[in-house]
Image (cartoon, rainbow, N blue to C red; front, side, top):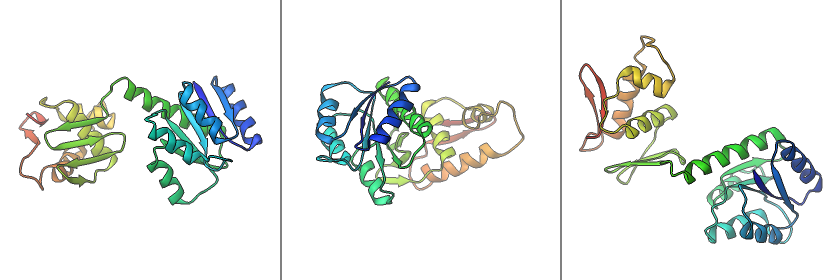
Length: 225
């Protein structure tokens, strides 16, 4: 990957450049915000790594300027600030991930790869926001809403709903759901599917006038028409 690093601590810069280089990545390093911003807007990068506290123009300001210019290059923020409010501010400004100092190069590398993978999925036009009638599931934000009501879902409920929405109108058997959601290729004689489908139905259907998820007796479940 082609990476940009904005960091004014030379020791950290050398460590990151060496570690990422050994992992096969190319890194352009900058010590101040204006130079990094110019490079980010005139060259092509896979991921930008921005330190929060640097001279002249800090990492957060660089991020805001990029997003204001509709630059969607993935950004990982580095910071010595460990306050939740600081991390939230960066994420709300458009950062894709946050890593607090000190950090291990292995974790930095893993986060960069994960960010790039998510970005490539979006660029490949993989649906990350699923919609049916007034129900919407955002797989990146991990949020669900029906109409103007936000629905709180747990991780497995999100995965279960994703499977249903990607297979709209198709009857899914208990075995199929065990394999797709729980990665179980045999019937463990458990009611985990029935229990989770019931919980999901209580959240996405019960409070509303129209049911989207129904049981097909003797066969399984079907979502939508």
